[in-house]
Amino acid sequence: MRALDLDYMIGLVPVILGYVPLTLFMAVAGMVLALILASLMAVERVIKVPGLDWLVMLFISFFRGTPLLVQLFLFYYGLPQVLSFLTQINGVTAAIMGLTLHFSAYMAESIRAAIAGVDRSQWEAAQSIGMTQGQMMRRIVLPQATRIAAPTLVNYFIDMIKGTSLAFTLGVTEMMGAAQKEAAGSFLYFEAFLVVAVIYWIMVEALNQGQKRLENHLNKAFAR
Amino acid sequence: MISVQGLTKRFDSTAVLDGIDLEIEPGERVVVIGPSGTGKSTLLRCLNFLDRPQAGTITIGDLSVDAAKASRADILALRRRTAFVFQNYALFANKTAKENIMEALVTVQKRPKADAEARALEVLRETGLDNKADSYPAALSGGQQQRVGIGRAMALDAGLMLFDEPTSALDPEWVGEVLDLMRRVAEQRQTMLIVTHEIQFAREIADRVVFMDGGRIVEQGPPGKVLDAPSDDRLRRFLRRVGQ
Ligand SMILES: Nc1ncnc2c1ncn2[C@@H]1O[C@H](COP(=O)(O)OP(=O)(O)O)[C@@H](O)[C@H]1O
Ligand SMILES: [Mg+2]
Image 1 (tube, rainbow over the protein chains, first blue to last red):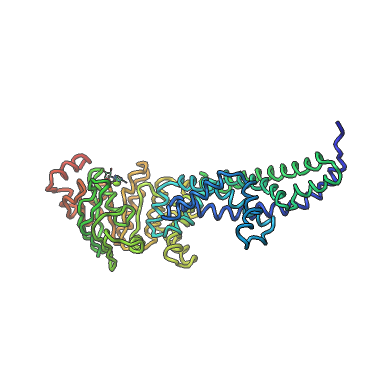
Image 2: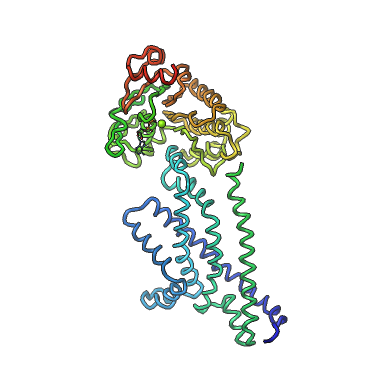
């Protein structure tokens, strides 16, 4: 056994922190895109567009049924061999794409369930004033479904942040890749990865606090 | 002029509306009474296609819709000429009282926001709820919620207002204030089709009372005639049952 090299760890913190923006960029971009895609798929699953429904079901089934790492490799290393226009794709883009598709499949299911949880009378009131389907979804149903789905969606965002570490396997130097490079020089693997773990941990805890605030905000309309 | 001809609605194979014919003059206030399960709600819900009728023609002003071949555009047009007040209020839970009233004006009628807000505040004053403009439905009593529901319908300036038992879900203490508001709406000579069990209220405000039973209109006429000198046996039995 040897003592932890604390000085090394403290020196490493700013280096790893320098990669936090990239991690957050991948997670936020992935989350925004996944939310849009998931909402579209969830609405489709509810109103069942003929000819599209089976495709959405297939998509959801595939991306929930296979590991994220396998999906990332499939996109980054596999697809460019089949689709030549993808050869330019860089690791960050591929990671965002993979995270988006993977998490949108999960999020579509929780948004669909949340939509089903919005009281029937809300739909009928929206229809009675002459709203189109799109207006009803955007202005009445989805905002209420968001409140129902919010805790689950924040959990997926947390999973997404942690999932960005897999970008390392696509050659992206993010927090994990930076730690790996540092440790390769110092051989202090435990210290390097411990710093990474603690930084992830703090980010996720900060988000958990944010989630509580978000829930209070969303519940504002429903408080007596 | 509002005209309904041969309106037919079947759930599975049972006819819930069995060829309803009904004409309503502009400004006329028609009250529909009848035992429960008779198709009163279904009649109202078919008029704006919350339930889709299988056959019949619905005419409101210059718009005439054949139920058998109504397009999506027909249905929207019909909904934009009617306003619906629900038994359970059905206020938009994610919107304040004011926003509930503004919603259709901004989103459907495409009026400028400031315009819609002014109209909403005006309606809230009429309903006596100007101090609740920024309250969410969950913070309002049943009576207040239904008054907002009626306000939402008033603001539409629709050709026909439909009320489906607007006081049936209310605690008795709130019924009075909702009926008072409906009286005020009636005084403005809005065209109203009202389903209610409040016979006394019907006597006061109705130009005509329609008695439905088994998916048909059995008897109709001025309240003095239908409520005080009914000719049909089923109507007599119904009135005795509700204590008239
Ligand atoms: N969505 C539905 N599916 C099947 N039957 C229905 C549905 N809605 C109403 N009904 C039936 O239609 C009949 C008339 O219902 P309704 O119009 O609500 O009556 P009322 O308002 O006069 O009490 C009832 O027998 C009811 O069970
Ligand atoms: Mg009813």
